Image (tube, rainbow, N blue to C red; front, side, top):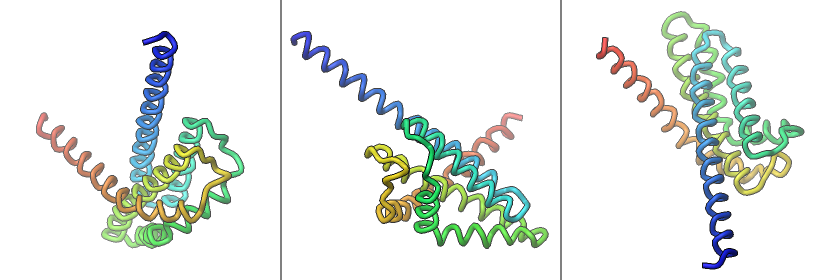
Length: 181
């Protein structure tokens, strides 16, 4: 192998390693924000939970844009359109569930659980949509709304499973901790 071939091979390995590392970091950002979104779903005050959820998603997108070196400006219009267009059914559940919290006792408990799962689901789906878009060289300015809407619908089901698996993971950790005591 010539020096030129060896140098190219090494550069390709480095590039592949960096891309893999970035994808792992992107998944970690999503997971952390899904957990945060699920925790905000437990906020007992209606509307405050939804506002916190939106803030969590904006923070997630800001972190993803930094990871992909994409300026985080002039994107709110496209972001809001893509979120509402693709996630209206789930957003509606979050809104209704949030208002359940005004009913003392069971309403508060049911509302918190529903907002928690729905918030985690939406956050996961939005994160996945933007990772795919960024991986394909896109930015906030050239987001194809139809493609984002379609992809968001697909990711909502995966997001629901992801959020549920996180709950199972937490329950297992709690059970293990109790067994040690």
